[in-house]
Structures are given as C-alpha cells and as structure tokens.
Image (tube, rainbow, N blue to C red; front, side, top):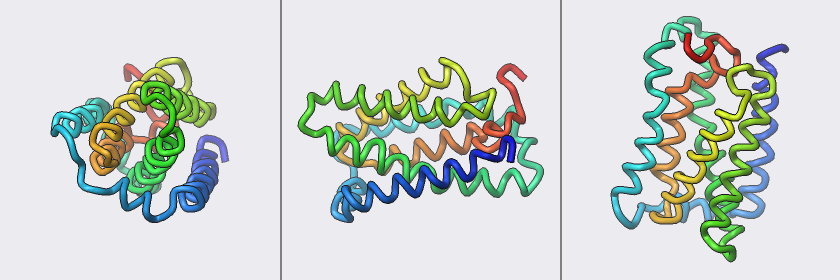
Length: 181
C-alpha cells in the first residue's frame, strides 16, 4: 500500500473514535457540542484564523488535485475528519477531564492530539518532525480554548475543516510536495 496506508489507518481510527464518542459521549453530548456558541465572537474569529493558516499551501500546490484519485479522498477526508476528531479530542476528552483544572485539561488533550498526528505522520516525510507536533499542539490549545469559552464545537469543526482542506491533507500524506517546494 505504501503511502496509501494512511487510508485504512485513519479508517480504523475513525471507527475507534466513533465507538468511544457514541459509548461515552451519547447523543445529548453531541447536541450540546453543536449548540449555538456563546461568549465573545472573538473566540470564533480566533478559531477561523487558525483555519486559514495553511491557505498558502493550498494556492501553491492546488495543481496536485488534478487527478480524481487524489481529490476524491482529499474531499472525503476534509468533510469527515473534522467532525470525528473534534467530537473526540475537544468534545469527549474535554468533557471527561471536566473536573480537572481547565489549563491542565487543555494541555493534556492538546498534547494527545499532537502526538496522535505525529504518529500518523510516520509514513509521510511531510508530517514527520517537531514542526508537526508543535503546530498541532498549538491548534489543539486554541481550539480547546474556543470550545471552553463558547461551549460549542461548531466553529472549531469549520476551522478544522479549513486546515484539512487548505493543507491538502491527502497530497500531504502522499508526500506529493515538500516544504519549500
């Protein structure tokens, strides 16, 4: 399978996350996570700004989407992944660490989020390294803060979609471009 091994691996991860979300999160929690955001609109803006960070990658490498074998899995991943990951990393895990001090819960779940992305990068040169860990850790912190401040994952999911979309997730997993190219 080579570089395409990310597909069954992410499929297994999604199934596991969905199992935990449905078993421990329940539908009431999912409804709560998708409720209308409260608090300052600035938190929503912050989440969306993070979503725009990889936009330069998209415009520089959009030509990599010329083949349907690349853009179909790219769109599927960008549409599904943010929902499952945000329900798991921010919704379920932050709910389960609700008794913890907020800063500790945010750091813990963000660390796990970053470590998970670093592990999935094992098969990809682009997703290896401390840069990936640091960037996903920072995203995790910001999105966890947004969730804690707004009590909603609506805009966090949109921001995560934007990152997966603009980062050209499938071409990235396949190492079709390198940083600086």
